Length: 206
Ligand SMILES: [Zn+2]
Image 1: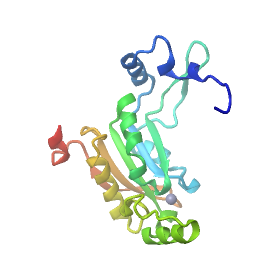
Image 2 (image 1 turned 90 degrees about the horizontal axis):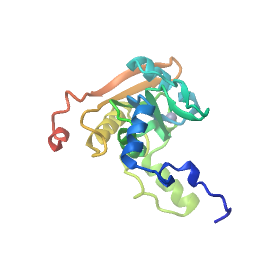
Image 3 (image 1 turned 60 degrees about the horizontal axis):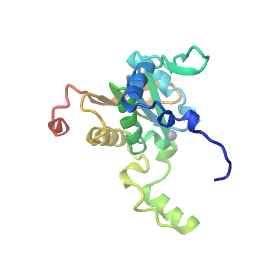
């Protein structure tokens, strides 16, 4: 250990009276979460969560709620962000699972944006560059169809399907794929996989 800091006071599960079920129930009350939005870490894409919140009638970023001691205990936000390269769903699966477990969710929204850096390279190209520049083979590290974006309709459909196929995504969740024009700041719905329409293979496991 680098320091002798004791961070136990900040960890729920390290408290002497810790009760996992009770803690989870309190979390669910602390945030009225409805929607997880997955989008790109490009600073130009910063308007996406606000646009999605407007589209779905969600509150974002909402207000932080203080407890009696002035500590930040809750939030009025209905929407959480997962910000990753290209907004690809492969990086968001675990976050969707945890959001469902702690707060419960109704919607997962994947957004891919115009002029995204993820459209500037190919899976083969990044593998080749890593081989030459870092002397490592990353060709087996990520599924090639999740590495970049070459066709927006395809990448959005792929990501919605990936989320739907994940056992960590509840069957009751609606999943949407949107294209976002960063200049017009406009969302276009490309894929819609609602819970009602989800009676196929994924629903069979219920
Ligand atoms: Zn991007």
